Image (cartoon, rainbow, N blue to C red):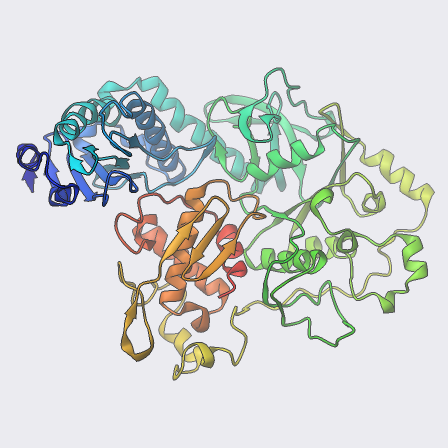
Length: 598
């Protein structure tokens, strides 16, 4: 390993040379208390900034092992370091002068959710931080004096203030670990108490605006109805009361603008832990919960939607249904089946973003259009079966149809942002109103597992000469690593030429090769770095031809197992491409692969 002074001399020697000379600085350097790695140098001062990382051994960092000895504490600890390092380098951002992105210093910018990121990795060896620096230049001429200021003044101060325990407030760091333990305790209690979610009394659910994740000032604090209130004794916080939503079918009702969707949104994001001060740090939802909605125009690939749609006029088989341009009802039907595949045990639904004909058919419509003329079996007739046979609960916001009162186990009315349990009152109204609209529902049958994204017989067209895929499965069982993975390598093209598969990522979309995946309506995907990670996963599936070898559950298992063994950065096609990644849930991986048209 080279020494820090070697880097200083090199930078002094290339001062005022053409910008590409910065490439010679790539490598690993010993700065005494830490090592600096210049992983990738930008092509010019206007290009994406250079990728840099610093690593400190645990012995030198000095953080107690108890802060990161469990996965949930480790994620919270890494998240804390990213936030603190971001604050430190922000004071030096663009202090070094030059053209383009000269002097930029940046790291991942987390929202209120605590997520696993490649920006910080706490491994058995030590702590690694990955970030970006804009190497300074005037025009396209190197200004190494300014880079020396960054690497030998700004950066060491930031590293010392964040990565060394002696520089931190021990109580502040300990509070991060304690909150993570309390949140994990609640998640375990959800399972023990057979709950979908817990919403603490005093939680602030409303946000500042539709484009802000900050808590709304002077909003109404959450107060649980007495009938749903329970008190948990957390390891560190102590006793905490709040609303427990039981498993089964839960309806959230009330007038417009009274907080129905606000509560559902909090439950939707409760699959992630939140930082202290967010207002939702003690809103905890089953971490497999999945938001369902209509999604006109999405592609559906080989999905058994016969649970909801049958006997189409064109005689199309709905047990292996595919379309490049789904309707709202068809897309929502497919989303339910895909959610079951992903292992989701809770469906979250808002009436406002659902297909009306998928959700319910009223009594008058059933009289005018007989059941044998309607191919759609609405969700209201399937929700009970999903819970009783599939173990999948439903939490639904409803504002216009009272039909769901008949099947709901729990009914919560939101009134001026305060929840009230009106289950008994609504059930009494049902008894007086008339017959349960679901009594004539057709027989329920869960779809068979093992769906392939490439239908039977299609694999030959994708992979000429490949053996039967069932034989391939015996060679590559799901628990094994993704076969033949190679960093920076593409797949074998025709004629044996290896092709590089390029990826592009925007806020809500990703592109792998020429195929774009639209993720705008995957609502629990909350950060662009999660999208970047999904792009690398799709690239990996394409380059290794996993789609024709395995079913979708086996594909996700292979990706997930590799990440658990080797870390999230292992799915990147280059070491520096893996820097800006954030781990999505299994449910979002399924959602992405299901929307990939390639």
